[in-house]
Image (cartoon, rainbow, N blue to C red; front, side, top):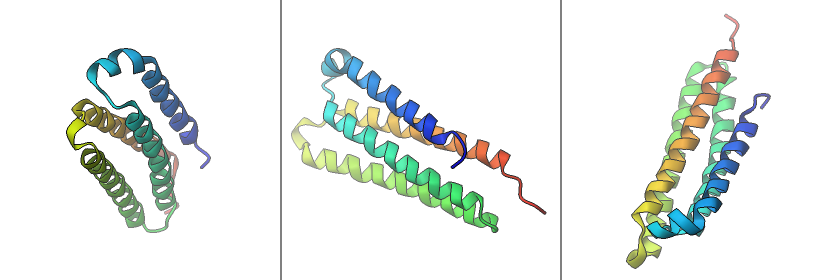
Length: 132
């Protein structure tokens, strides 16, 4: 990966982590958010986004353009299903103490990482010119 995706991913991860630690005692505690779940979700989403991006990036260099489309669909679907499974596991493990705010914040993290990945893939596709 010769582009700056890893830099942007690290910057977004650091920004989210820093914001969580700043808001831990105040706003997040007042909402009843489960802080360890947010941290685990942030780490997992960052790692899954890295794997998803590298898969899609390999598809971009393939000879057949359908490989890129399939790799983007597969990575997006796998990331979304992982989020659904993670949220379901959280709900099942904490039936009596489920925090809706925690779930919505995790979905916001998913959105942020997906926008970052899509933005970087778009930029990479503009730079990538196939010989005709």
